[in-house]
Length: 207
Image (cartoon, rainbow, N blue to C red):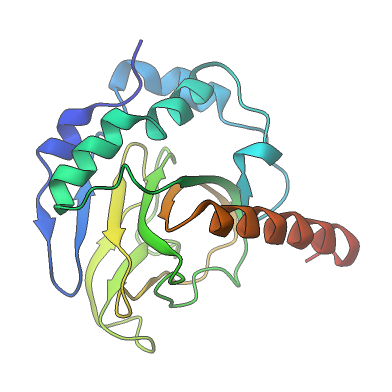
């Protein structure tokens, strides 16, 4: 059973203002959602963990395989008019969010494109944690779009020096898978090394 509905990507509208992005709903097939919910990793640590740091199983493991697979990359390449097959991918998973997350940023220059797939059953409008497409690095209130982090919502954007995004503070469970197409394998190795060190420090200092 496939977990991804590629038509959701094909039918999504690409926007180029204030930067190139695509927002799609129903990326996850409806008949896979119960199993995806069940098999989502039991992550206790806050922040994004690489797939090497997480136990993948069942339907969720299949989802990761499809997110990292050539079919989705091909559809996104067509949507953005950029051959993404040439770039290695880094997959990270978050379950627990902290209030300090969500600061406005563009993503680092080693990234070419970032895709977020949200897996929360519901989300209240005033809870924070809703990613915003922003016009600058200072103002959360002036935004083009707010992304509801609910089950099956996908947001993908081409990284640039003005791809500002962030969200208002939120503490608690916020399930999301992030796929980043990056410029080189060395960038991925560096990120994994940094992530492991960060997790060690969190274990020591509790933050």
